[in-house]
Amino acid sequence: MATHFFRGTQLDQNVKFKDKDKQMINSWKWPDNFRDPIDLDGIQLDTLEPWIVKRCNQLMGNDDDIFQSYIMTHMQQA
Image (cartoon, rainbow, N blue to C red):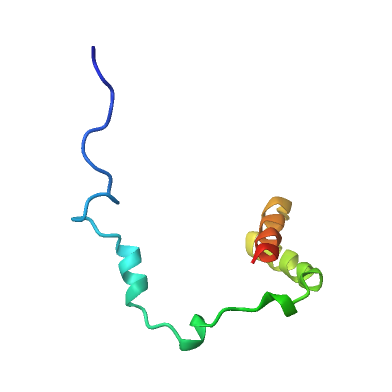
């Protein structure tokens, strides 16, 4: 019987191969105010939603309802 599986390890399991993106991000100097959490309780998302829809349309070049609802869902959960 022949078994079909991949031999070896994945990149995230092998310490010889480091994640270069993670290493690069950790080497950046971030401003101190990036550590402060954002209080979304004072933001009215229903007034912000038209701007989010408009900006998504500008960046993507088309109207994508699923992506816009995805963004709004994450904003409401935060």
